[in-house]
Length: 426
Image (cartoon, helix red, strand yellow):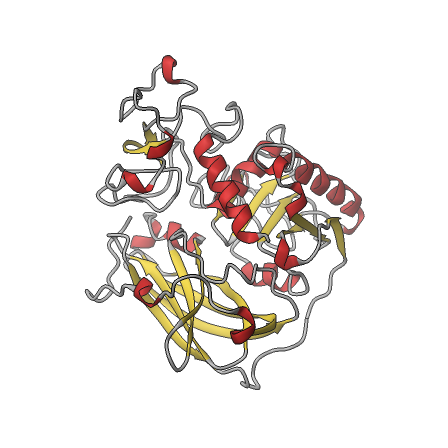
């Protein structure tokens, strides 16, 4: 993790957090706010530039989980009462910009990333604060804005309208985890295939632990967004396709890293849907994907491991799980600061391990735990994880956050997923 050139003053945002959750009906109306902005910067600098604000008809969140108290994500954003500064809403997230700042490219050039904040529509004027972790994992404010509810420049129309199929409906958005799927690289004549692929992926996700015990707490919607051409960009092979969301492999020069930077088109496509998680399904046989906490999930449809990747990336996007592999090449430099504890629930530097999964470890299991066959089915503290072979530890020897041959999610990841399901549903 990099040293960010912010003011030395550390802003302890959680001093503003009230005990429990704010009262939804005292502070918010039905509907949502979409606050679009651009992150511009390089390895040592960033700036938030507002672009537009929209009022949306539906907000997909749980009104009893307005203040995310899990301390996950490389960023968070807060909605504060304009008069008292009391905390009304808080949500953590990660994004592609944060990862890009750790690349060699970011040391020599600036780049712009488009993204949005989503929160329930406030009754009164509020303050918006975006915070980022510094190199010591403290929260530092990088942007503040005053949001006026009667601003007549707030956009209130839906510019795009795509057909939506309901794959699973268990009731109101507020009571369930709401997943919205988007078709990428499917032409108009391939929408039947898209729906078949989408149903297959969701069926698999809800058949594995712990999701199989909570299938009645999910709503799933498939948005049919046609592309001009089938497939996706593979720059390393000089393959370029005209698709709805401009997805591409070779993100940060990694052949299997599949993402998109065209987030405006993504957000425009789902303006009419209540959602908690966005998942782009890409029509290709190539292996790969990407996932970012409370931001975006991406997976391919037709690879022999696509069902596994679908679950793995959802672990990132939904439950803030970190990658547990440590031998793969990456484009990152100094991605993690091993002198501080990590925010991902399944990774640790042992700096503050009591916050992690210590209660799940048997008293006769050594810490750190050797990667020895006698511990193959044991929850311990195994060195290696988060792209680092040394100084970062993971809970088990094999987990779906590390390798496809594992027997599903490990107990620590399972607990993190289960906790998130219960936070998002009533």
